Length: 58
Image: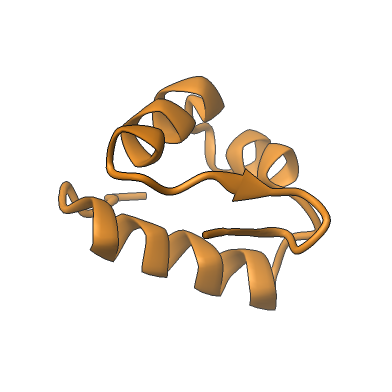
């Protein structure tokens, strides 16, 4: 899966997939072969944190 480089676009794509297809970020990353730590770090640097209770980045 190709992910956007722009952090805001990345957050939007991930939140949409989390809402529509996956029950957790871990499940999404495992299913798509993504590095969860790298994604969280990139979005953290842009001010977004994954909120497991909401299953989304905010």
